[in-house]
Length: 432
Image (cartoon, rainbow, N blue to C red; front, side, top):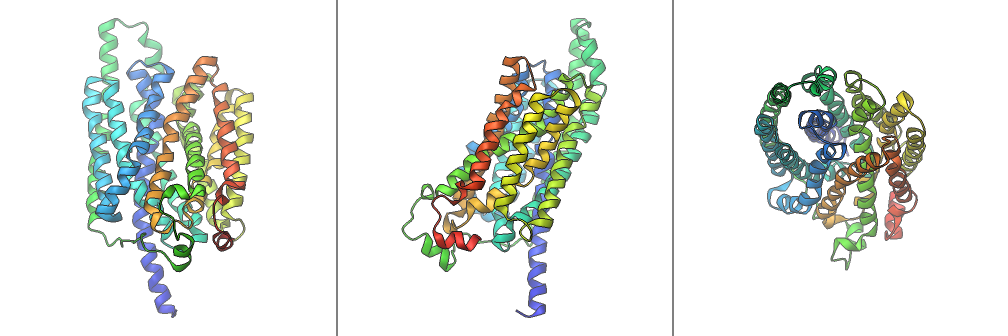
């Protein structure tokens, strides 16, 4: 290939990556608002601990429900138009927050979160395999790490921005609520609920503008139904996605990984408040978790695949996750909270590594394989709820983090041998 052709090819790759980077920024911003919504809605809608964690359940269960339909939609629309449709769906979910805030009806908030998660399911089904395919497979984790930086920068900003509006003077309000007359209390809670209206109107406008930009962009369509010669030979006689056990185990690992990531980011504000730390301080803790994740992504970009394979990265991540989980469980106060925040570092390279490892060799099954991996995101609906139930049952929030131990053990298994199950020797040699 000539230098001119190589430069042209590089520009063609960079442009789509920039566009997809904008989408990952949106993913992060919308997703990590949940860390503020949990303590905010717990206060505004007068919820128990378990009820408050239904925020993550409603949001992430949509990935399980919508993952397979997302693959069908993408077969009709293609990647680019599917991304625009996904952005539009998220906008509808954000719009539902307005009547939810006006009525202070928790069920409507949860419905809005479900719709937002549904749009994100479609976007993620399209964008994650897109980044994986858009370049050499051995550097896929590096490209996804770049997307992760876009995601987590947005995630670090989102809680600070929403908390500055929604949780303003929340500590004082918590102390005063029990002493208020019923009509005054109702008025205060209604005012608190109405604080999210303006931010979500802005979110709706931004989402719709980005949907139009993506629709008319030069983003190329990628045909995942076409296989190279080696992949086609390896997949001869295969008629179902269920014939790829390394993918199915990847879905399981992703399920527990997302659960662990959501716990680290979405429980830490509420957990900090149970450790005697004021909400005015605790509201910054999710940002700390995401800054740790950003650090991990930079390590991934610098080291994968030059100094460290995707497999080694996920092994180290799982071991670090086990150590930090133990510290969070066995200590209290700021040390325990710091261990939860540092889980962001342990989690950072798991997602970028699982995707290329699980999608390797799928060829014409890539879209449905991606859909199954997206279904794994439902771990964010189940595992954090298990944390909330365990913390409430044991009356000890730090003991709730016991749910992280089996999660990281399963991730470690996938890193060591699970990703090899069912792969042909030629495919394994190709990945080395």
